[in-house]
Image (cartoon, rainbow, N blue to C red; front, top):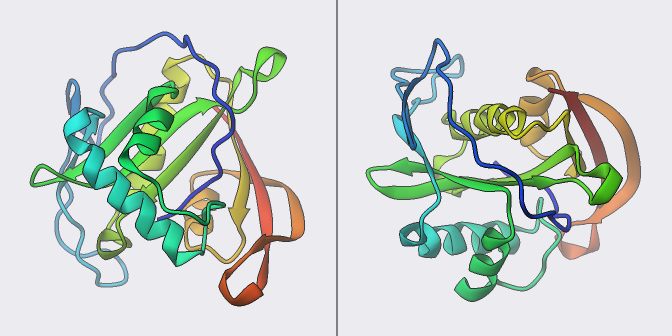
Length: 205
């Protein structure tokens, strides 16, 4: 599941501990999500962990990022990332967490302030899931996890500035209580010079 443009982050956010939620067993710094069986669309729901980023996952993250860039359906970039560029961006974030399946990163999110100075109390995040693992609960779990971590960093809300209207992630955000704050007509250029609207989504934490 895809994702949002990264805005310039503000550094220095304090770290936090993770509290327990009824449907998740937390073992810091790893969250074990125990999902089994089929969802309502008869798609397999996978077991996976959510773990704080470490450099051993950098290569997987870079591969996932470049896969989404080349799809041209959600991210603003047009050029592939080097591992150095991905590592630099991750290093400027408030948090980065990975979804792991058998010790392989299959998705991740980065969390940072939506703006600086008087706007740094609102969070922004980017989520990407490897194509073969989408529609298996990974994206929803990453969004939920990021909302919890954002609250623990004392962010007051989560704002997404550039969600492509036709992207499958939109229904996840709306189901989690996000509201549409605005629409930018033809704000995103798809491949083959076709255009789609961008949505601005917002949720109080």
